[in-house]
Amino acid sequence: MLRLFPFSISLVVAFSALAQSPRPAERGVPVPPSSWPTSQFVATAAKDPSVQKAKQILDDMIRALGGESYLNVRTMTMEGRSYSFWQGRPSGLGVLFWRFWEWPDKDRVELTKERDVVELNVGDKGYEITYKGTASQDPKQIDDYLRRREHALETVVRKWLPAQGTIILYSGTAIVEQTLTDEVMLFNAANDSVTISVDPRSHLPVRKMFSYRDPVDRQKDDDADIYANYRMVQGVNTPFSVVRMQNGEMRSQRFINTVTYNTELAPTLFETKGITYNPQKQESGQKPK
Image 1: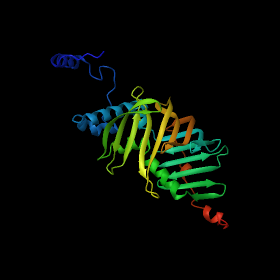
Image 2: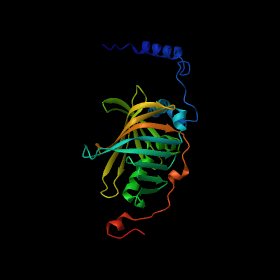
Image 3: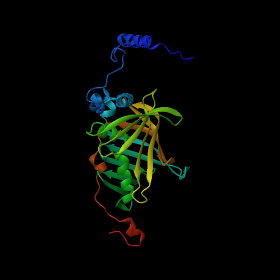
Image 4: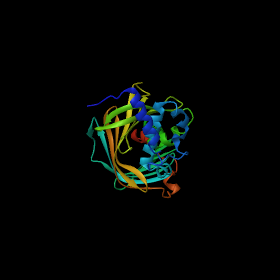
């Protein structure tokens, strides 16, 4: 049974504990470097308990993800299998993929066992490369990719957190994937927001979620990534399973077999010879030039 001590005794106990408790460094808890993205919130956190709580959660999360090793990832090479879902059910048997990624805006995904379908995104451009040639991605596909990249966890940590005008707040707890998580909301200067749900035991992110207004029907949609099966690779704690959810429904799931970081990637991986055909014209019976 919980017992309530008299107010005066509680104060004595509290101040005694503060006086005798060791500092974080003395307890063996590493203090986040001053160069970490959350450093700009130090002054605000001293005055606002919500910001202080949010900053501590984010500092612990960055540390759990690998700290400096995580923050200094510049390239990634990944191989695995991806599955698509429609109305909560698998829409296929899954497809092998190889991904080559370079911070901040180069991404190449090779699909199928033969690796004969390539989705390439460089800057704000998107291409699909097949045996037919190189075509521009559908505008809706490009918009979806750019929106997700702008709200990706690495973008939020590296760009949002250190940017002027960003606000962080602790928004309480939530059950995510049967796990009680602490949730932090981040708002950038454009009043865009992302919510990160963090496991308080492992300090690893369980879910990252954002909302946006659909440009066609103007309805508000939710987009979330759920992370699981973390493994340490080259000092970076990596989720080997990622599920994408839209409005509460599973849309895709990715399983990683192997991943490596900071290997030199050939520039040719992110180059094209330009658009060589238009799928819409070819479908209407016109031959590509």
